[in-house]
Length: 317
Image (cartoon, rainbow, N blue to C red; front, side, top):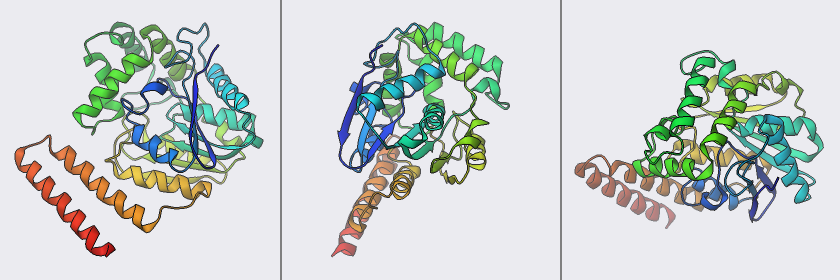
């Protein structure tokens, strides 16, 4: 089994555990995580990889299970001879990271869980949860994942990023299609949502742990984050504003999450100048999103950006 990986940036090593569908080649153009990963790459030596069946890794594995996903992470860490590193687990990558940290606590300096999934939907109650929903979603994946009609994949996209711009949603739809074949996507989805349940095992963790979760996450309920933080010894919990499971550059949670990761891992915090630039950039992103609404909002957005830049320049000088 060949696992594709990439190393970029400079600083302490941070490994992002692989997700359900990723594509190293498109992390910087189609992925909603591109800005977030870019911000991390400026501060860390960032290690990314595509799990088996996805992206540039071998696309049609014989076996897909939670244990094989952990083995993929082990293979990357061993190949790169990483003795000790910070580990970032997003979505179901959170469960993989937890299992890796339990198995190799001496190698994990810091564990960061962001919108982490620790129990598949079949093990959860509530709206959009349960075994029946999992069965329905598996059928949808089989029928529509590889279709030229993006409406099938759009169901997943709107859960991942409900407040995204149209362009961001279109890009994510395309990423889904390019990253994994329909039958592999369905097998991966089944493994995650009918086998995965590490909720009880977080009590065994003995590594420094930071848990962050978006309050109105449509994909993995906020309560999952609270559950993990409450049961993990010594964990720090940071609730994040917003509703996007995939944290986008225009989200308020973006800067908070980056800052918390830096603080937690001991990386130097942003300078005053950089924080000001990020604030202006965030306002530019918000204005850009408003452009899609109406001509009036376009004018208001431009004015807001100009005022922000002038205000920033006046404060700096």
